[in-house]
Image (cartoon, rainbow, N blue to C red; front, side):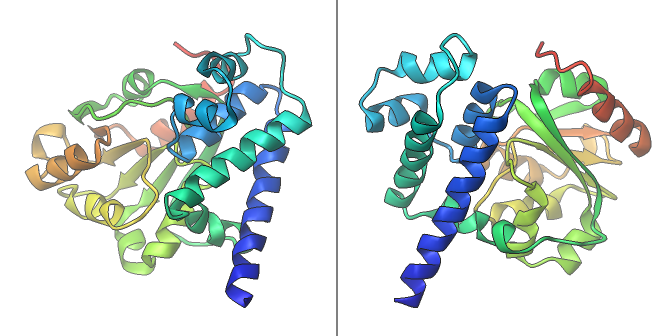
Length: 246
């Protein structure tokens, strides 16, 4: 019984977090899209569950349709949670630690959230990165720069997931990389997956073939760059001031 109550409490808290962010956002459609992508749910699956045309969800997310009111937002949020629970509730469970605790680790060098997403190709250009694996390209709603050695040594798999903040649709930049294998192994064993991985301090040609293979299996875009780290953080933060999707 206690476990059921706890699970219900996690879901309720998460629903409040999601609905509040969507409703209060200057761009509710973008916020809605971010959460749908976080739960890895297709527009057709969401619309089918709600009994509406896929174009309705598409119009809300693109801003072509008037921003949904609180009642509609609530229905969409509950649908996302219901669909996840029907698949075993892995995403809901992964967010549990973020709801009830905050991570404070020296492994995090910098983290930032975007209101408006940046495209992967634009990010690669800004940080002078080369693609190791193209993967499944998604819009990026933030980035986290992680000291790969500290993250792998200090964090459990549960704590590692907290590095994503409130959106997995982000670029995870791993510093102090020698082959790229260890960060990809850490990602493989966690439920949540980032939208892109950037290996810092190594050229694309020197990335371990096994790291590339793991990226291919998880369909994660994998990039490598040797650009100065402070310059990377600076240019990515400044980009958000223009919030233009290219």
